[in-house]
Length: 320
Image (cartoon, rainbow, N blue to C red; front, side, top):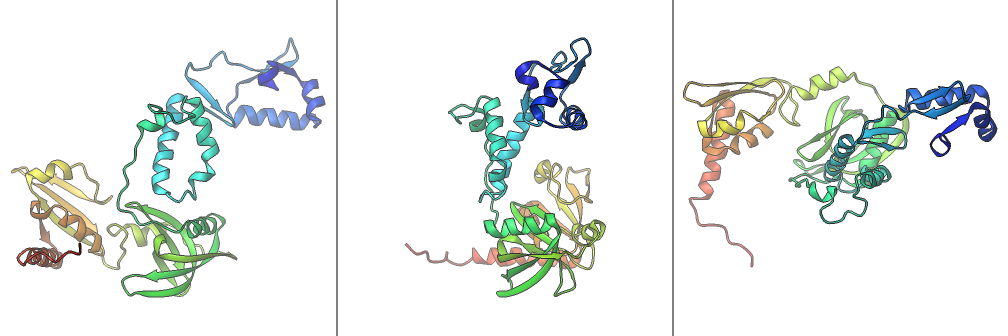
């Protein structure tokens, strides 16, 4: 009404909306304080209006939001990232109406060649996809703080189990989703890969609560998605060539690094389980050396020897 009529008297609002004066005042306060509309009262006219005198030139509006064009573009970029994180659309389809409106405001409603959305591209990585229904069930249980029954397949043991869990948080790592949860069978915190959940049922039973501090302590001190009982530190030396890239990389939140006099890079990384760390070290091949601990050095050396031995023999036969 304020937008269409320019200004509206309190009496008109009361008559049209058929609500009490207290409700009108509460709604006006909500529009002003929560949604950011500059609603002014004109005492001479005894009416309310939206004051656009301080309107920023590129400021555009979405119902309930007031955003600049740069802010709208940032949301659109987030939507592109979301489509890659959520290829099944379990999340994306719930925000499609908002994204469609944003594209309209940015002049890209038809997704035409040369439009804003065509100039943003997220390249896919080697992630593992979760079942859409299982993904939604995990989200519901997590947000409502309910327990969840899952059918879980452990690939390393080729074992399928039925678990009752209390979701604590969801983690996205290397284009794969994980659930950190209290496992009622193991009576301990466990991390479950969502792509290994083959069935999920939300239970109308309150979840067992763990403090986020304890969750972070259990999972986040290790390297990557692997947790473990003993914290150790990998001591790595990178060649001057590899150091150009590694100096800009974040391997762990608690890592330390320094450039040596000969331009090699020394990197110290905490870990509890070497599985993922070993893979990252081997990405750099001969450009990195593990100085310690001795067991990690031997582990990486053994993997490299095994890989090299494959190239000493004739290549494996392929099927045409």
